[in-house]
Image 1 (cartoon, one colour):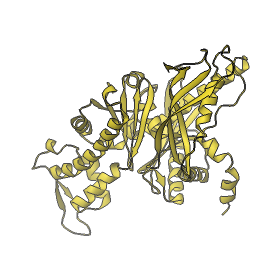
Image 2 (tube, helix red, strand yellow; image 1 turned 30 degrees about the vertical axis):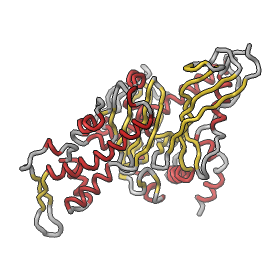
Image 3 (cartoon, helix red, strand yellow; image 1 turned 90 degrees about the horizontal axis):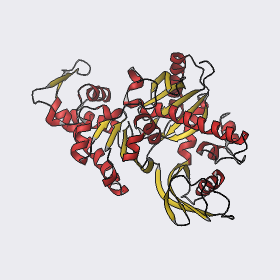
Image 4 (spheres, one colour; image 1 turned 45 degrees about the vertical axis):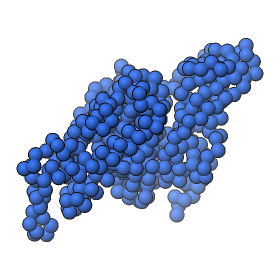
Length: 426
């Protein structure tokens, strides 16, 4: 097992920074070897606001993950999210010279690469280009065009963009922590790999990842991602509401939310009271759990209504047989799934990060709050397997040695390496 490839996922969130280490076992399943976690002190709503605080948190999480897994960590898949993330639909096409020659992988690569040339607002960069379906000479609904014949090859794409500055700040924090980045991956795509199965993606499902600073969502249908969105509200907004509504400090509000919080006020009795220690010798404060639930429910309803609006505007509202899967730290609130069902009318379950894993992780690693970190590890193995397959095909002479499209990280940092190295000396 010592020769097995090891993948590291680094989830830089608004509430926590988690580092998860995994490897494949002999059956092709992913084993979680260890993890580390630190409070996120320099990130707000998915965007780095304090470089040094973020670096310190990353270093703490990576050190803990290295100790628990017994692995020296130098390379990681890093998640990106935040309200600067946008998505759009676009159709692209290429004209082929020879109709007799079969459509090859190189044709698909050229079509995808053309999408990276789209004109975007200043400061934005394409993160992912995801083909949804292919069209050959007007024939629609083609999933696998390789091997077919045709002059005009078209495709409908789901394109995800983000701010270059936000990605550069993440890269800078990771570099200052002594790590290299293997790839930058959109966090809801990573979470989806950890908590959704193939049947759900085929039937139609909405992944809703309720994090600390943002709520990320992704809609799948026919095993293809159809819509993504980032809602600038999350668990931290609920904590702030509790702090204001109950006139207590933030740490007490967070503890109340985790220990006694509920998303449905009707599930609490009027006589249920919790006592909060007073500050500096003051009298303890008594708080009604029903009032606490009213505060939480109001904000959760707002978040879910935002999600439902995105579902309706996506055009797939009536095609989502598998309903909604909630994950992330916010999904651990009691009755969160029931409230979601009441508002949307869609079946809802809580997503735990156990898809594709050798066994369900225990303790913190098995919590929905670590779905993104586990998903980053899984995405890393998927990318590694594709590269290995491509190399085998090239050795057998079945594919040309034309390079694949660069990853988001490679494109925006290939020319900026000198900048980061020189800036690091300041």
